[in-house]
Length: 335
Image 1 (tube, rainbow, N blue to C red):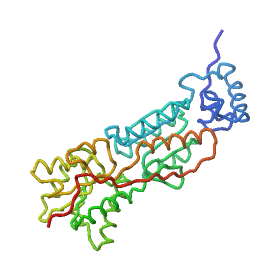
Image 2: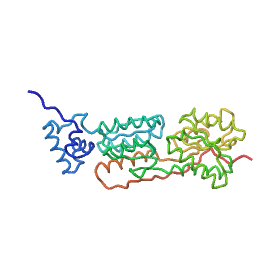
Image 3: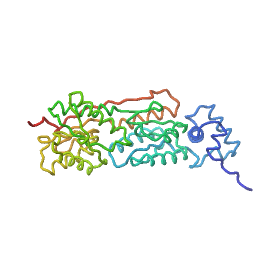
Image 4: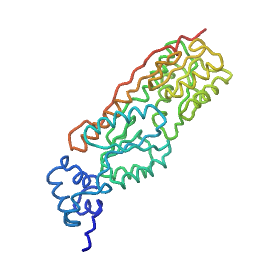
């Protein structure tokens, strides 16, 4: 006797008049779906595939929550993902992780693939992406949580990136520095770096100072990028007396480059980062930086996602505090 074929999850969702994610949850995690919705999905599944359809295969069941980060080669995202996973696993949800390599076209492709798999929700970094990607997210029918930066169309867990750049610059201005340089990541597709750079410019402008284009260097996010950026600034006819870096990883590269040239830090050059990586406190000199609560970002994003999946009320925008951590890499300008 020919066995009845198992229906596709997409067909069950269409027959029940619900989203792919809702159909997935109704079959894989019925306890988090309303009885009315569960009954609609169950009836559609039985109609299309009989009792077999009520026991979804691994491919038909929901695949948990997916997080797409710019890179896995940066401790800030690793820390956020670890905190995210701890919260989700405790609630019985799996976490799928993908990296876009700071390339919008890669993120778009990954998004398309994850949505086709029927993930229950998406957690993304930043609020800059192509119109096609935004259109895909708006039509996805699953909760979307943005992190680090916000867009009014979606829930978000954010920090004030503009303030991070401003706080770093104000600290150096307060120490008597007037000629600042910046080493940041490539800003074209990175709203976090653009905001931090703008914060530095605005802090300087508030004191009647400028950041000319040639004293703001964009580099890849790596220690080598930090070294190259620092070298470019130090080669100027009038090099800066202090450097603000868009992330700690670049700041560490700046410290290495300065020390390789025999420059005393902070006696001859001050360096300030943003993130407060664990290593920042253990360098010599220890790195002054702006603390960004990356683990709390991951935890808060996961909790907000769970609230949305359960249909619970929750604040749609969560802003976490940042703060300056003063250590030994910044000091008064030598006159």
